[in-house]
Length: 121
Image 1 (cartoon, rainbow, N blue to C red):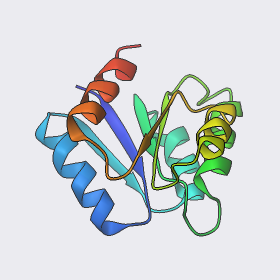
Image 2 (image 1 turned 180 degrees about the vertical axis):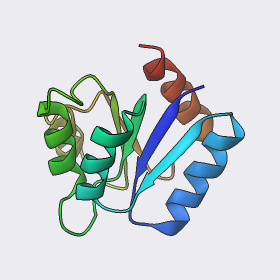
Image 3 (image 1 turned 120 degrees about the vertical axis):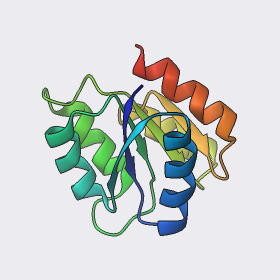
Image 4 (image 1 turned 90 degrees about the vertical axis):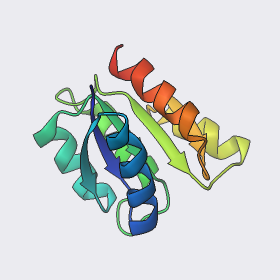
């Protein structure tokens, strides 16, 4: 199964995502802000990153861009998971290097399918 890095400052969201993913057999690593997410992406080399957008300090768009542009982490697929559901947000997230974009509340079946899809890529 995949090693998944969850980058989200909400303990509730982290719990929901962790429960669903670990229940499906995935290994979970958690970062609670964008900079920690960038650091853990380098250190942990996860198979997939689930990135929130609205976080203190480095936001998810900025963290996605840093991870995507770093040669050490540029191969890691990033799925943005956020409450921001405007087309412009989606387009901006994809421009920063995200492979996919899901809006909260996330359909867990779809999330698990995408994690498996990208972890195998």
